[in-house]
Image 1 (cartoon, one colour):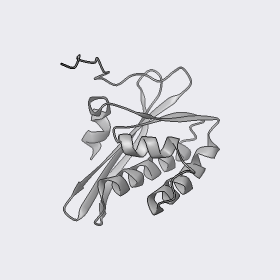
Image 2: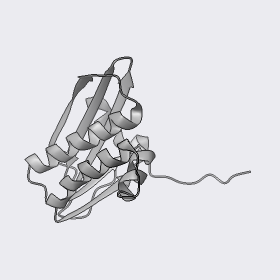
Image 3: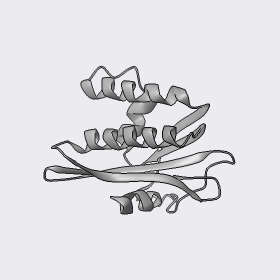
Length: 139
């Protein structure tokens, strides 16, 4: 029998002077939906984005698209310290291991991560799906 592990099931504030950018994507037939929400350490909404793309993509490519959009939003509102949060563990792991993945998706992730050089401090973390409700709602 496996013990029940306690996981965060609500949005957690970022450290002081950081912004937390939650992003998510969904795929349905021939449409990709994405949502991005940017909040400060008090939970105040600083910005966001959302939309749809008429394209056939796998969920991994859709999550990468949402990540790229979240980078654009953060840069547009001049965020210098950021924590990007996604419920897609596969994307988060690939971002953390960038430069080592020789697939086409890995190359595209490396290209997207070049945008992270614009930040003074940046991290990409996994967030439980329940912690990403606002980004999910934008979709």
